[in-house]
Structures are given as C-alpha cells and as structure tokens.
Length: 521
Image (cartoon, rainbow, N blue to C red; front, side, top):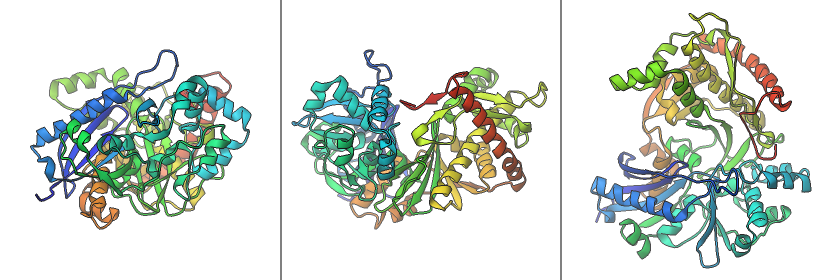
C-alpha cells in the first residue's frame, strides 16, 4: 500500500494534538485536547505532569485524527514527535515513569540558591559549555528531587524529555535527542552529547542519562502496545523529533546557518541559526542545539507579549469584544484597524513589560506606561495598544543586537510565525522597527509541520531536512519596512532602553514588583 501521509504528535504546554499531513506539507486533519499541569499544594510553583492521563489524551488525539480524516493507518509513511521544552520525566529500572514536571515548573528556587551559594561561578562555567543557565534547566529540578523526594531520586534509572516519552509510548524505545536534551543544561554543546561531569559538579548522579540520537533518525516502529493504544498500524516507522522551537524553525524553513525566525505567542522567541557551537561571554542569551544536525541556535526570549495583549483586550477593550461577538469579527482585528491610524512611535509614549534577555540575571521590571499626555485625542486605548505592539518589536530589536554582539552576524530577513503573525499591523511594526523584510508562512503554527518534515526525511521521502522544508513550506506574504517609520523607531529605541533601565532599578530596589524574575535571582 502506497504511503500517503505523515503524522506529527505535538505535546504543547496547554494541549496535545495529532496532526496529519500529506507529503507536500498540506494539513489534512488535526485533533487537539487541552491538558492541565496541576500544582502540588505541598510545593508552591510546582507544575506536575500526569503521564497516565496525558497519554490517554495523546492516544485519543491520534485515534481522533485517523477518524476525522478517514486515513488508513497503513498509509502513514512515518511518525515524529515534538513538545514543550524543559519538561522532564524520570523512569525507574523497569522503564516506568515515577516523576515528571512540565516546562515552567518553578518549585526549585531553594535549589538555585543552594547551587549559587555552594558553587560560586559554576553557573557561568556551565553556561559556557552547555548554553544553559539555572533559570530553565534540569539541574535545579533534579537537585529538588534529591532534596525533597529522596526515595524517587534513589529509584531513578533514566531521565527523558516529553517528545522522547511519546516515542517511548509508541515503540518501547527510550532515547533523547540534542535539540530538547540541550535544554537540560547537561549536554555539551559542541559534541551534542551528555556530559555527566556537569551533573557531578552540582552534586548529582551521573548515571541516569540515556543514549543520544539525532533528530531525523528512524529509531524504531510502532509496537503492538502502541498500536493497541492509538489505532496506528503496528510496524509504522517512528522518527526522532525535537523541541518545539527547533521544529517550528524547520516548519518555516529556517534550517541553514544565518537564517532566523521569530515566533510570536504567549512568549516570543528569536531564533538565529549558526554553524558553530559558541556561547556569549556575558551569559545573556541561551544557546541550543538545532534539530538539524550540525546547526545550533541562539535563542532570546521575550516574556509574556501574548499574555499582555490578552490582558489589555480583556481589561480595556470590552467594546471591541462586544462588537466582535455581534459581527463574528476578531476583537484584535478591530483594535488593529484603529491602532493603524496612530502614528509610528505612539506620539512618544513608551511602555515596559519584558526586558531584553539577560539569561543568568533574568528579571523584568514592573509593567509601566510612561511619557503620555492628558490628551484623549492622541492618548486613548488605541495608542496604548499600539505602544504594546511597538514595545515587543523593540525587545526583538534588542535580541537581534544581543546575538549580533556575540556572533558578529545578523539576518538579512526575518521569518515571523505564531499567533502574533496573524496581525498585519504587528508584522509591519516588526519590519519597521528592525528595518528588515518580514516573511510570514501560510502555516503559522509550524511546529507540527516541522515534525512531519523530520518524519519524511527519516524514511527517505525528502533527501535532506532543507529539501523537505523547501517542498512543504509555503509563503503567505512579505512585509517591507517603511523607512520613514524606521527612522522614528531608531530614535525611540535608545530612549526605551534608558526608560527600561530606570524601571528595572526601581524593581531592584523593591520600590516596585518585578513582572517576573528567575528562581534565585
């Protein structure tokens, strides 16, 4: 029977989904289930992952997409997986899950403080080797398990990530790949393999790390239990996937060194590809392995732009929400149309939410709007709204500069994907602030497409990951910078940096509350 389909399983922060594609990257069906990661009331900031219930949801999505599309499981050429990064699972010697936490679990503040106190200077030393800091990595979480759940720590035989867990449930084979594995902070960037001495230097065990297998490798096939759970055909090839941002880059064609992408959602990620495993001497920006072998990524994160937008919509734009409900429009579209009439620079008004990334001293000032006048014609809710859009683009400008300082390189254009790229106004503001062309793909939620491309590459449908992306990625439109607006933003950017510096100082002095700060900072 001829192969017709590629299946991606995507375990995100808020939901899991199964997405079926044809061999040209066209999405044929998607079934999604929301899931929750509950806090253990004993441990503030915890974010537990329920592997039993969540596998029921994931396998149900697979059955659902097969039913929705009417696809014959035997015609699926290959399957791959992707997931939220940073989340980890621990297994015992029998291969049973015994502990897991999701990506932004924040229970290990005490352990970060312990590491900083016991081993001064170690975080920088480990960052220069691994590209990771304590803020998001696995080291403080493993130390938390050692300190707070010693019986689990003693039983632990293997550590894994969520995309690899999905493969394990399908095939019975457990391995970790470099793109998500590197987010643990326990991989050596250059060799793309575990360095157990990193764990040892933090007072942790060094015997719990499974084999590393590169993304795009055919690792096995759906076994009898995997088939019974999901409705897939036993023997269907399974290909190693990767972390969500790295696979999102594949899904928008950012696969070669020098290419760059911005993903705009609840958080914004700037990803810049490089062919050299290097880090930032000042430890400000994250570095990960790409899911493309031989490629690495500088990653700079902006905190909560999508959540700021939702807050503003729900807190101040009830009229637009009411009109949207009556007409079937999107309230953001109504807000965008009005904000388009506000001139670039929002009459000089500025706001502060996320800071430019500073990985080993990561904190964000209290949210602030400033430099506005008591003139309702100029300074109304649409001006405030546009200032939020401009603010996020300013943070992105800061991230491009940060990476250029470290690598000496900057992109010639930006690929923009994620929910924010659905806003033409935000796309144009990003182009104007950066002074670069901004390309938007047809498939804006590109993570699952990246997994499908890897699946096809792993079974020989595509000669290379780059060729697979060329075949599957299609473009919606391109936004060229308005150079007059760019001049306005060039003048405004250094002012915004000074305003942010002052606001951050107020939070450092405990006059105002941080919007967010990393554990132990």
